[in-house]
Amino acid sequence: MVEIVPKSSEKENGSTGFLFFFSLFFLFASIIAYFVFLSLQKKAEASIQNLQERLAKEKTAEIEALEKTLQDYEKRLRNIEPLLKEHVFTSKLFAELEKNTHPQVFFYHFDLDCPNLTVTLKGKSKDFFSLGQQILILEKNPKIANPTLEQLSLDQEKMVDFVLRFQFSPDLIKINLK
Image 1 (cartoon, rainbow, N blue to C red):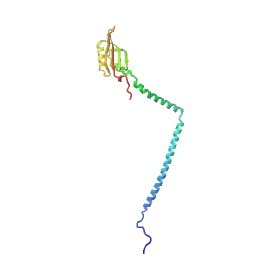
Image 2: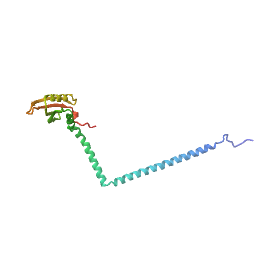
Image 3: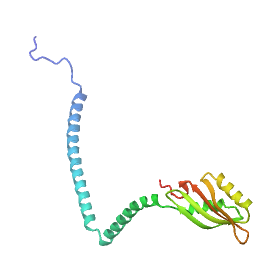
Image 4: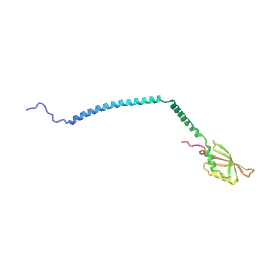
């Protein structure tokens, strides 16, 4: 007898149908999750915008005054830097001079010429020997250059009266701002 209905030669595996339906379910779940997350993102952005607007409205006059004061101080600090770069700090020069003064020499007049980096000192010394030692001390200092003795005389108390001039390094009067 001849069979009219052909029989399938292979039997379908049950897992193939299961994978197909699982893939369809996963596709629909992914699409739904995408739209849910998109909606949540828009709600979060709207909430952030709303909070920022409320914060801007709730700024008190005190906070605004403090912000203005803070901006004013910031502006002042920016303006003071060029002034400090040009300011002359003579205290470092005096400290250097104090370190390099002979014990038997004292100065009673100080004249500073900042543009030429020159100092003129009038002073007295007990004797010529201590004055010579003072000049040697200044010559050995790397921050002081060209010490010269300009006037020399003996006063009534037999003290050596002198005028001493020297040039100095700009590091002694400038501040380093970094």
